[in-house]
Image 1 (spheres, rainbow, N blue to C red):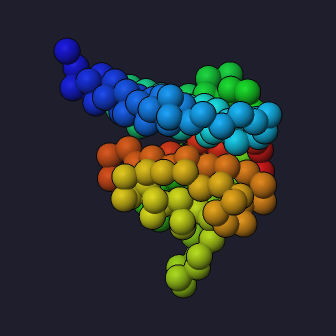
Image 2: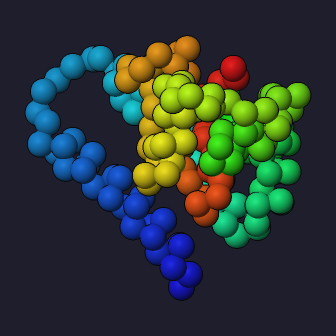
Length: 158
């Protein structure tokens, strides 16, 4: 089997096991579903990013960037993929095609969202939500591709 498939399967398995263990041990009764809805949205965002990463690794940077800029390929349920190089230059975005080639990281130690996402992607990837920092109400999942560029799944349009 392909090593990427095994790794992806293992990550998905690890994602679901803790939730099922907690569900078995949780005997409280409640009607608040806001947390589970948010978790489902975050899971969908992460899955879109991981699908896009797998696509990029399998098909190469040029093909992936073209696909990420197309509104019909990696746009799902109000979420989409953007791609950046390590300097923060936008490589692909289906909603900001006029900004492709623009740097979103200032050279002087800014702490903006794109820099935070880039740093997150470089250190293994992860989620950034409005509860964590000011994201203008959007949630993000960043993932590095091959050390030269990275992607981010975005919930909504900027």
